Image (cartoon, rainbow, N blue to C red; front, side, top):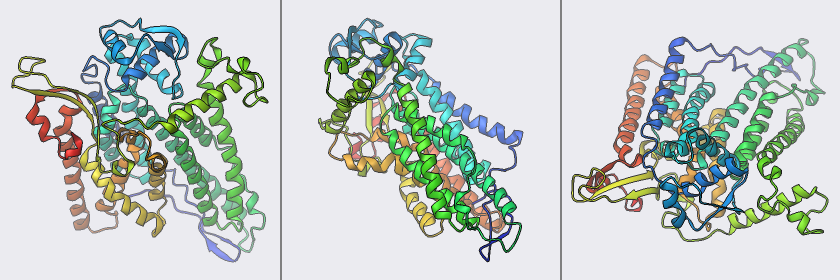
Length: 532
């Protein structure tokens, strides 16, 4: 796999020659042609996401919750209850009647960040605009394509692989559908990906600082490193930025907490590898000590960010449970200020609801089936008849199905085996980095197999599914030291796989975008019985 590194400075410590970590963040600046390719793939992804964004002009799937809650955040600073159930209120909202709220607060089970972001689009374009409902999702979806392109370039040291990552994310059905729908999970993905980018930058900067100090401290070839456990590498500003992003991620859905654990452990392991490679005698103790201190700082920053996301609730006089502590003296965590005690009680109720949710839903899916898309979620389905909505045959279908690109997802299901092999046996940190994102977004759901959960939750870790495929494509393309014939063969194979992914996206596009097609054409796209 192609990568760009700087020569390491050879040093000697504890009687043996070692290599300090290479300052790999010093890659050649991208040329204008490379930037053009990056912006082109981002522009392509943005165009198809904004194309007919307002179709259909009615609430889709869980938009019934988050679109209304987003507007009530703008209106009141917290979620308001409705004047009836969703099936009673939704037709009014779809007709443009947004006066569907009561004056009472609503009990909700997800934090405010994602709803604030949806509400921003409604504030700009108006709450009666279906384009406005989905505007923030489309913007975030487009920006995540740009982010993943740059992240993959940094991770793999290749602009080509970075552009391929951006392209594959742009044409993935799961990411595409969520980018065009006013749901929360696209924002979980975005903030987790942003945090991942921050810790990657921090890794590169930390290794450069360590390399420079090691080359200075080990000028004497006989010097030993008795106190090297105490080496402090300065303020890690990118870790602080990552903590802010993780606070916003958890402030959208609590599942973001698991990304914080995964990335926090990754930073410690990366520090261990860097200190050991630099020849520091106490590399393990030093990594744990400074990792623990850094983790504590990140926890404080993330917690402060999370609490700040509840500002609208704190400033309100009648948010849900806002004055619970006043009305229940002596209960709960009495050592906390009244507002925080009320918020903790509110969170206890949210937790109980999320853990105990076990209502049957026809599209619920066990996490074992997620990678192979055993039961994708149907967000929307209508069956127009001849003459309705432009239907030209006896029966048509109009659907939005959160179905990942089969080439990408089924390829990634196989690619994870390659990642595990390369990480465990070849000690490739890049494979471990991708696995960290997959673990943070995917593995926690196995402890909730009896709960009502859905395949569309996979959007949170879709970027790392794409990175899995790109990692394998990099192996197929080969190294710069390989023979021309080997690289030419790899290019043909990789190119064919990418082309197949593009054709797959084009084939499924009608059921991503609610196009009216003959029902037989819809059936042709239901490859597995469980997709129906």
